[in-house]
Picture 1: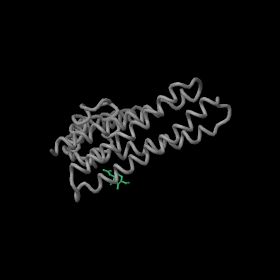
Picture 2 (picture 1 turned 30 degrees about the vertical axis):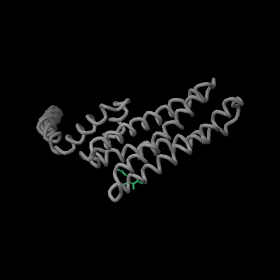
Picture 3 (picture 1 turned 180 degrees about the vertical axis):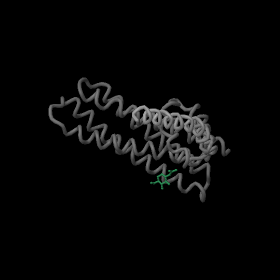
Picture 4 (picture 1 turned 45 degrees about the horizontal axis):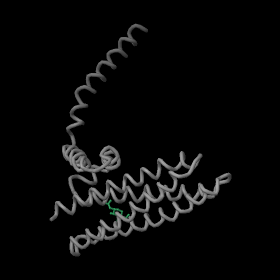
Length: 199
Ligand SMILES: *[C@@H]1O[C@H](CO)[C@@H](O)[C@H](O)[C@H]1NC(C)=O
């Protein structure tokens, strides 16, 4: 009886295994547009300064982006904005924590302001992008480029300020800020791509 059930189990596993072999490749080819989108994102990201981060942050939105350059660019701005917002919240919380050196407090406070500006600028650029259909393309893209460049400058100023501090704040916060700046730099590269493909 026992021998029978273990044989049974073995047979079931074998069948399951066979099924997984048969159906897995089928699943991978099930959504060809998803594959096209993933490839599109990889190619577009390859010309940015941080291609791995670019691909990693956008490929999870592949089914939304498809192979649409406008959606790709808009998504990269939205992802950047959301990262800038959460980092800004983290910084304002940390700036109020006990035991910071005066130098650290000053750097954190500057950063909170710079990030607030950067969030505003990213919001404005996203808003501009949404009007792209019914306004002058070149003028609108020019505005978007200006806002996103300004956001990048603000983030870099913050990074530089943090870089000059010593201690816990630097180790906690630096990586986060750097990531926001890298996402912004990538978004700017995709914006430039969008502008050049149109022209
Ligand atoms: C970006 O976010 C805005 C505001 O939430 C939204 O209206 C827009 O559709 C988003 N764009 C993309 C491309 O996801």
